[in-house]
Image (tube, rainbow, N blue to C red; front, side, top):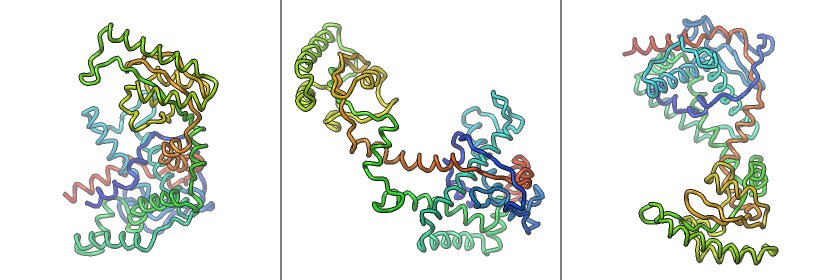
Length: 376
């Protein structure tokens, strides 16, 4: 189905929690048009030409049928979400606890989805990450498969009209994943304008409050069954932790020697199953560790050893280390790019025309649904 294919593009981005963004209403003289096509589902439902440019980000315009597509996507998603989690069908009369109507909520999500779409296209243009010949050929081949399926190009476009969109808008939406892939590839290509070096990533990790700490864990649970140890066994573990702490206290002051001793003792005594994977400690940010561990780690100065800390895992002794830049870079490699994109979306301003206000979400969606039922 065409609809299922389209809904896979930028789907996660379309329904994320709305960011704070500015909306500016502009007149046609500022770059908006009323369009020339006076037919099709979008026009029949709202009186707005599908090729009318009704929204814009930095000069990149969104047509009315692109708005119609994202409206259909968002309402379909919300309908499925509500039925799955509440058992209730989508209700246009629904109002959220904060007083927001479902119609305004849909409009907000649609604006965000369109804004993300336009910013993505703008970034691809800015960084020369536009479609390759191979990607264009893949889109054309996919279109041809649908043309063959429906019997003709006209029949294919008639199916698209049932979604409220023209062929060129369909192809535009189909480029989204490719553009994002191209930008991400540039981000990982050394020497490109988008490339982030390990040093860049380490600085970013520090801004996001990443730290590095090693620890020695003496577990108070049976490592086989997971059951709590007896009070006597716990007391033995606590006594051992105190012995280890005394050895470390005697070495404080020389970070190199302290680190070497700490690792030696950790290799000998620590019962942390993650030590084999992280032999030199953990690099993390807030929310990643159990609360007791996190609080103790952030309270330490670099080169300092904690007191014995008890958590649900057992007794910990922590050593705060300088930030491991390589580990930090690896930890934020994915989030750096997504934050870069999110920041560009957040800072962008989406402008809308008077025609945009005529694109009533309920009317659009119910018209699309009616067209689908006629098809069935």
